[in-house]
Length: 393
Image (cartoon, rainbow, N blue to C red; front, side, top):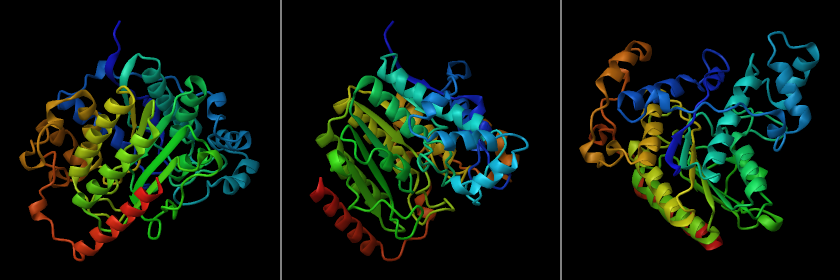
């Protein structure tokens, strides 16, 4: 049988990845996005593939045994005193990444989904795959941080790298630097990590500067593009287009894995950027084009951050899938934005706190937005960063 063009991967246990009731990392995002795609006639429920959760052996390809053991212990309904005492050592006593019951099982389901997506593409069963529960890019081998427990992206990359020996370009468009993935492959010449984000001078995790370019054999296989706070669409897209194109041209990947955190949107409460839905419409198209030209179309997309769970995340993540499958909703111009499915809004209005909390169209009405002061200064600073990045490639 010929390969499928694109597959949609989701395990129900990924929806158990919830730290507490008030935590901004809310799995409702997964449910509402999937529902929006179904109600927009872009996805059939029967076509969603449920992967096998990752084994400990797979998780241990990136994470330390003592760390995984502690995650398992803290996942129990009544963790032992020893496990609770160890929680601080591994990053699980902070407000951003507190331990919770069942966190190993939920995290293993997410890892399994990202590995399955990458394996499906590399084995030739599909050309493209989307796993929106993935993209937990901040987790380190021995520490949970930034809402991330297991680094599914790094584990998927390591699986493909070790099994197929292919060169992988990782593209991270989350507003926060993709630090956990970068450091996992910082000395590896076969994995190129690219991250565009708000500068670490003002935003977690405080890394991702232009001078971070890799070490030892991996020197040059790392590109960071830190942008100024209050960057808008035109500047973000100009810098992204030029730098990610150069990364792909120089590296010539056999597979592209992209992370689609959508927290650079102006509505997001955890960053300082001023972008609209336009960048989440155009970036997947740019990445798809790169995959078609450099990796035989092979492209795996993951989710990530995004904390305006009603107005932003469902639209942004839906646009990744719509672009993957060439749906008409992904082919419109921002100025001719079609309306959001009315039955989706009716289904979620009460949960969102009223119909006015939901978007009416696929794109934002930028005419209603206040102009950003110092726009020319911000754009000039970003171009200086662009020049520095391209000079170092």
